[in-house]
Length: 578
Image (cartoon, rainbow, N blue to C red; front, side, top):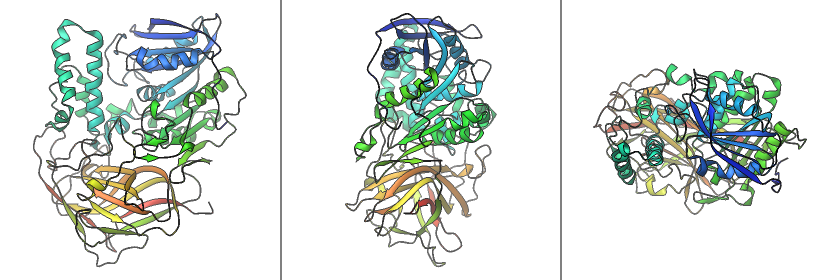
């Protein structure tokens, strides 16, 4: 069933608000329950959110309840009407408190429940779903996870050692402000006003140093500052890392994401992990992956225009219709063909069509290096005008150097909650670029993309940012995928090692993945720089303790591309016959 159509509503909807749901430790969480007006027992869908219930859950509640489900929209612990302390994801998984498990089991035995429960939602709710899977509530029959994070450290906070500043600080300020506005107590009035003013001046607070200082949030979000005290992966994060517990998951799941989504890597990794190691064969065979050309958020799923590109009518995707078909099969026993199609469906950008695959990455991929080469020198469009070819470099090629000053970082053109492809020509004059000749034939790239840089720096620590772009015949330089690596994490995310200045190292930068056809007449371009601000925090280059310094130093960073040190991009190329 590739393109299901949602049936018309069959029930009028009754809503019960602020229903108490007790957890194992006695904490009471608050839920709104949408159910068919007619008496009876119905399958139940649970969405657990950190946001105001009516605004977040009304649309889902009314849609599913009007089609024969009970919908439970619940505030997670400490959020809005729920008791307890709000610490993102701490109580949603397999720790001492198992709020996801307890909520599913509560829903499974209510008078209006058929005993079959599904999990629904995305973003924070998607993360809550992932964390609940290894707990295996007996009443849980299926999940449909839109753009969820399955590893709090890797997906929410740090990407290869770089702090995801804009989304983390912006989300913390926005959510704490929403909590204060909702509870509106006299003793919090001054804090609310201070935070409202800070939100109006968010750009200043993103630039504020030291990073561990943010006065508008201090005393209001200890969890935000606690995360900054743990910039390395380790046991403190493992209670919110599904990758360590793939083998304990035993639930059919649709993993849905977007090529320009902040949780793309999590979506791909979780599908692969459960499909390979899930607890039962039924679970492993019932994993499905859908990746469209979208950015984060339910309102963006199925959109045709994303960022500055139009992906055409094939980008359409009826999220509710697909979710309903999935739940109808697993919770109502409908024989509707949801398992009759290949397990992977990805949108092939450039050709702008859906592609059905048997696995991810697809079979038949040949990982082909695209090499960085010496260019013609600096001009307004590039620091070096380097070349990109599939031919390995000569031994005599000179390296390229650039200055990265943390006081003047390269600005981000892709930031949450926006994003999507945007023409990067306006900032390429501040970066190294390596551009291919115009392609004679289409080049199809489907799978994970990685950069290998041989480089050195004048400082103890710096960042490497690499981006792959599709250069159109009219000159537009449109991003396809990108990545960042903090040099001190080059060998491990658990243990850091500073560089020796002027010593050459091999750096691997994960650009995540894509499915892109570079059309004939287009060119490939690789950008290399050391900042992407405020999407990521600025590396101050000092090698000092994370988040505690207020001043940085400029770095001179150098990329080599000769026969002994062939910096390159590793592209997953599909031949035309494949």
